[in-house]
Image (cartoon, rainbow, N blue to C red; front, side, top):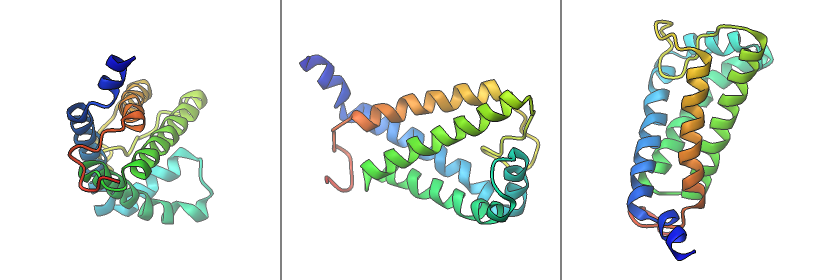
Length: 151
């Protein structure tokens, strides 16, 4: 049992995962922040939100991704940041799964809003599931090593 706990609470592994996932979330948000109109169009194409909420969602969502990514990288508000990232990934998986079930080939809007990046929904689901496995590890990791705030 002590060996398993030592792996789960590994500060170095936690740091690598935090930096990796945090950087992905920040990078993914940058093009959305720069191009909210195109991102709103992508959100609309998912057909999951009422049209009255799409614009506010397209403006707020990238900033939530940036804040969560920064929280992971810096190790501040770690519990809340990890929880929010897990909830975001779960919502991404849900949105992609619904459109896969509907048979809709959508533009993801994950890293770019340019429309040039076309990935299959199954690839996107696998990527998000992999990120979620990493963030679930962070959820159970108790190490505060390399965190700005030790709380």
